[in-house]
Image 1 (tube, rainbow over the protein chains, first blue to last red):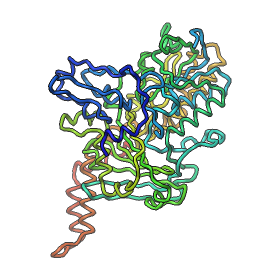
Image 2: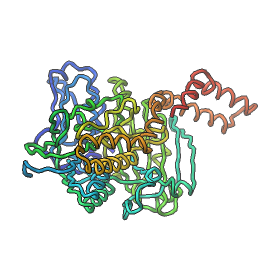
Image 3: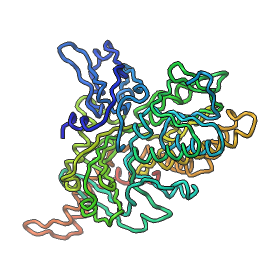
Image 4: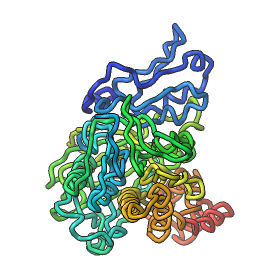
Length: 91
Length: 433
């Protein structure tokens, strides 16, 4: 099963306000890109043409791996506002 | 909510630690508010899937009234993986499913919602959908919490906000999350009808199985796979240490690929065949030595459950929920006792610390003090699973030209795989877990 198919099974209540923000100037100088591998939802991707690191907040499982692993401090992360984000039905 | 709201106790986080605490303080007659950022309690919570009831045997029997747990675990399997080969140690014993050592599989959405019901029944005000944004500090003590523009005062605040606690660091105890003290767990719920679960795992109705899978799927990263049978689904997942995952570098594995690798092991695939995945989840797990644990209190604040690092990794199993419930109960009782004195904000942390020291929580945390060091040895996750599978393949196989002396073949295999300096060092270090 593909990752996007797995994420489609989860219930989300999407906040219009992004709860993850990236410091692009730091991401631009990063070769490691541990966020790309670590994110269990595969939400991080580098847009090679523009050199921009993208994060898709809408499938976030709110684990916090990205903020824990980014040694450069490029990830600004907050919990989604109360009542928003992933809603596990089994857990 | 009015800006003048004031409670005896404010609990942050509606998981087992927070809800157990709120239930105690509310039952003791203290005005108690609990804030949970999820749409309901349990909405953000994930665990591998098993609650050990044995350590919680001291709780009054009424505590467990109508508890929605899944299956009684009567079968424990440890499976080592080397390529398509697997070697398992399998224990099936009715004793495992009986008091005083009983453990049961659990799904958190259901369990945490039940526990929230118990807290409300006791008189606590449980507020879901409410994110706590910070703490109120005055003269070095915590005097309340902030939700957006609302300030809510409390004699005592309890941080039970999980592995990624923001409340304790906001109050100045505990720092940002560290990859060397956390693991990432990813998990799927695979729906399967009860009859097929029981056939495949060799169970009677109501009985459950737990399986730990060590080897190739985690690609040398400390951690492992797990399977737990629920009533009509199987929890299957992988836990991997974050520091090792990061250190693997740009060519290293992707977190979600580890779970796919586990599911691809033929022995595992067979157990899940025909099942339908219904949920995909991820959560951090504290994995730290008690020596590195954050402080558990300061004037006006107690820290409980995962937020305090209360998880014990025994190697073959990781326990957190029983410690969370126990630490929540101990925190609640400490606050209730402190409330009768003049300065609960100062008395509660001291009583909490003493209560923890006298309980299995600190006893087990201290006993496991050096286990994380042992369990970080990557040979456990790559070399040994391969060596065991290779040795057993030698033992059970007979090729052209005859086998010769079985003992000689086994000795040769054992000598290269286990009986060497590194093997002896690992064995010696094993006393730490």
